[in-house]
Length: 231
Image 1 (cartoon, rainbow, N blue to C red):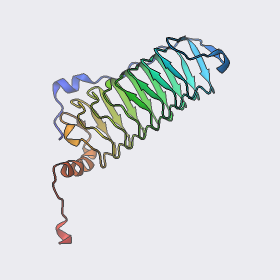
Image 2 (image 1 turned 30 degrees about the vertical axis):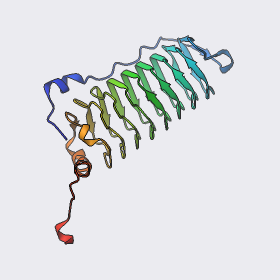
Image 3 (image 1 turned 90 degrees about the horizontal axis):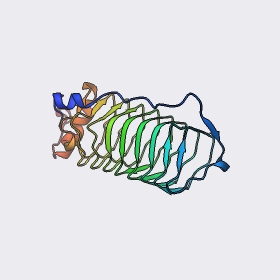
Image 4 (image 1 turned 180 degrees about the vertical axis):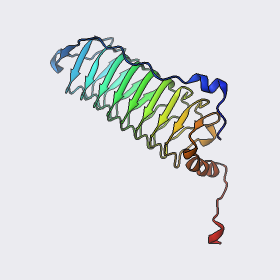
């Protein structure tokens, strides 16, 4: 269902704050970086590093820039990223549980199959990235912007999307069952075949997105649409 913007829902959205990076960063090589439990990394510049397949609990990254860094297939528990920038990174099949991002920017990232479950994102911008088959179950979004992203078949089941905005995103086949969406914003997105459409009470849509949503809603309600000219 599509509702008119409420004062409560409209007030919930604000643009994400930008990451606060230092003027200079310490450049680090793969040999100098040991990702382990409770490890802390601050003011680092990480470029062209292979950190795939790692496992860590409670790791923290603060005021770091990760450029073309490969974290694919890694497992992070209770990780924290604050004031970080990801550029051209590979986060495919990364599994992060109970983890958070605060004032983070991700651009041109590969995040296919990423699992960010039971986590929190606040003041995060994700742009021009591939997030197909990603899972965000039970994650809370506060001032989060998805811009120009491929989110086909992404899973937002039970997520709190009240502070999220999607712009120019492909959400074909995405799942929104049991998600909280009062105030979530969608503009120029492909919503074809989305699941959990009845959870979209209070969402704010651009008018051009209504056609695809109406077909999804009709299917969820068991309504059959016929073309009289084809009878």
